[in-house]
Length: 389
Image (cartoon, rainbow, N blue to C red; front, side, top):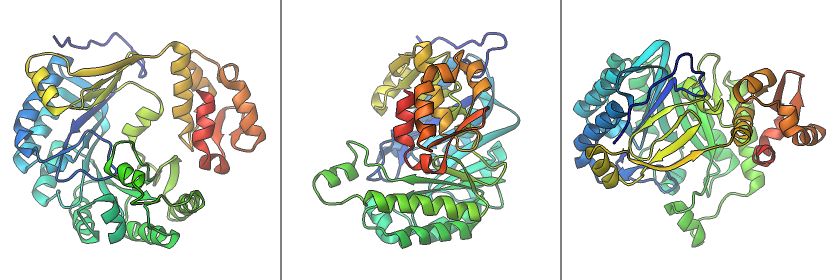
């Protein structure tokens, strides 16, 4: 049986969640690069899924819980029809009390969000929308198997802009066949829309995805490393010039428009997670629900947990993981006192050799209070962060 989670008095944020993630797996099409728990062709299960989602939340929480951030991701949450989306909003509003000034984000794909759905979300209290544009170049969209174009993004922005105070666009660079000029053009088009936040990711060929299989068969070729670096460097410089400062390795925002929910992850704080494939992190235990929709439905309907893999890190392992996540934050970096308060470890005793090495190489900077990646360090962040583990 699922046992309700109960907070202890004054639990710190790395133990008891102040953030909640809700997963909606439905999509019109499974994109070739996507490794998330998303499914196409099963829309007929949406009602049953919402039943199970509500049951999982109710059995897990026992009573409504106050949180600072809510994030509804997918999949494509706005793939739900208007009635289903309204029901989802009611479920979330019933079980999660958003604190004053809290943030509620919903992911949306262009072509799936109309005025009726947007009005439902705004009325429920959603105050941030994340739009998955990925590219405006038809050839790149074809490689990524995205079934929308610039016109659909423009329509979505016209709907989102007047209704939500904060909204973001997702973009992907390093798409096979694209050039530096192609990417720069994507950035300019995105900036013309006027977002307050941009997430710009280098394409990753996730094992098992269709795009990974195509690369294995020689049907697509990744862009070379020098070109990918040039694209990334161009992103940092152009967005900074437009007033969207980098605050995390892949994220850029105007002041005050950072994703508060994602900052929870990068502090290694606790979070709730519900739905197929959803992860949660409570009291140092990280668990992930099954990614198989039939198994998720069957187990929740039987009143059983849908949890798959579970992990509890030893204190030192957790401290090292926290260091890695904090160093992804390019502005905040790793504050020594905050790190010690959260983990019980002194970062210089824990990783002094790595700190000294990368400072000598000019890849880390230290002002005595905080450690941060330097500009050059950002480009080799994976190697640096691995050393902290």
